Length: 165
Length: 213
Image (cartoon, rainbow over all chains, first blue to last red):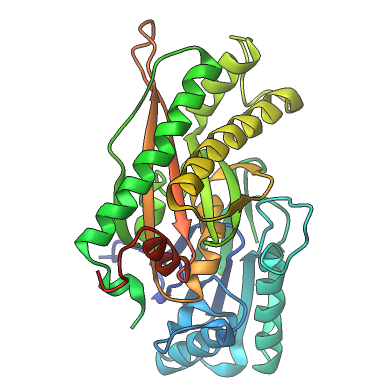
């Protein structure tokens, strides 16, 4: 009998991995970036909900690696490799990094969405992982769900409906 | 260890009083603006994880109107006035005097959205100025910005500053209820005050409480 598909939820500043037929999802991405790394043939995927671009921004000793773009991408890759993914077949899909509020003052804090996206891309290129699809920027929130079986990323927004990448 | 993990009961009570005074003034301002009776609940102060913060705001995916402003000055922080979308719609109807207004109408009604932003501006201004008087701290609110979207996407923006110092937020949450005898349903909005981690010490000091509680 086929296993009942479960929906694995990834919280804010959190990362998890999933194997088909299970699905993985994170809700309410604003300036945060949701990244999915997957090995299509192994039907294995990992998702992280990243809040900040760089772990050097951390002001305390204990580091939540899922929170920062640089550490989250590395950690998620390592986690997938440990669980049977092959480095050369890893691909990435990204969503999020929006600018939720429009302010006249262009402080660095206000640009956090685009900065998160840039940081994730830098880290992926360091690890030589290709981005096969992305839906980033803009000024709307997103909820994303990934199916490791089909390698499709479903993106739900309030105003632009649901799309699949 | 960060301060948030060792906050005392007494300190939480002080923060609760801050929410009480701030939201009390905001409730009065709202009452005058709408010419109606407005009630507020006893403020709730909690140390929460970011995921719990989303739940407080009604769930990460729930549709909400959020007015956000940054507080600069002696005790920096972020502030939100959040309304579930249907409640925001009803506030707008009362403010612009158009009982048929719908937030889904396209193109977006600029006056309606501006009215909602102004509502947030007045309420958070009342909240902050009373807080400033009470603590004798200089607090300067930024121009408020409005977003109508998933509550999680809105709120997480206010957590950016906090998230650099840890994985918890101290949130001072007060709910305002607009009471109208003709409506069975009450219209409500919530204030979330999220002081930056460094601001707690300043606030407690201003009120004569030592940080060690």
